[in-house]
Length: 378
Image (cartoon, rainbow, N blue to C red; front, side):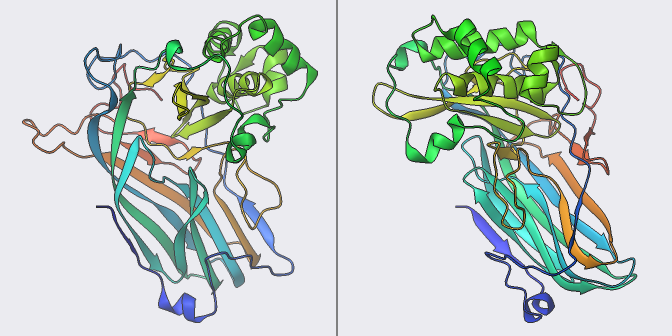
């Protein structure tokens, strides 16, 4: 059983902040965004065969090798003067097939807070406070216990009919354009036709797009541009490379979306099997080269790439840390600490790799005794 306990500040609630469904507005409100989190895992990671698979298992299928983690993620505001109408948010993980949230508690100081589900696979820790004064501190923190899994379902082309059923209404979003992911542009359509146009089966089309990205988009660390620039320059980090794969799939009527983990992206595409059941199939276009499976324990922060936030006018490709207020801008710190725990029944108590801490720049810095091992990506 999953247990979720939400602890909110009674003072903030009494001040009239109804957080759920909030569309709070004030005149002269200023939006403040933290630096976009970097995504730069573009060099193939060397698997060690234990913590990271070098190949999928031969005798198992499903969500495998569960590993427990604890996560603290939150927002701290320090008043530099008088401000009112304080709102702030930071992306947080949700319960997903490859990660199970066993428990989450929200702790607050001087505010109210909740976890908002913005989409089935995207959520925020949302903070609200009536105001802040110079020297005052406001904190909202979500403390998680969760389990992460590797995944191998043995997906094969033969499971999926060449002629797919009509895409369900709720998934049509994953056929359209997203911020920075152009799908309808002639450049994208022509390339999708060139690479996959003579291929009948959608599995083979997706695999051809996966291979094309690995061969044709040179890995380069940098700030995200967009799909058209990546295709023009044939350059990109994990975001561009995954986004190009997504755009080519969508231009070929295959639903696809981004998956965001600390400092990294990959993609998923959607097919229905012979029984009519839908499957989101992973396609790793940077760091790992896996197609159809995921052989590492990764904390998923978001799936999808066109997320609507009630307080913002435009959809977001990837959720950012942001703050809104009227008056003096508080200092904002968006923090996170992810730590692996020793598995139950572990003989030597080794929790394994995966420790990370979120820095001021949004980068999740590696920690723990495995931080410099060759199989650990940035």
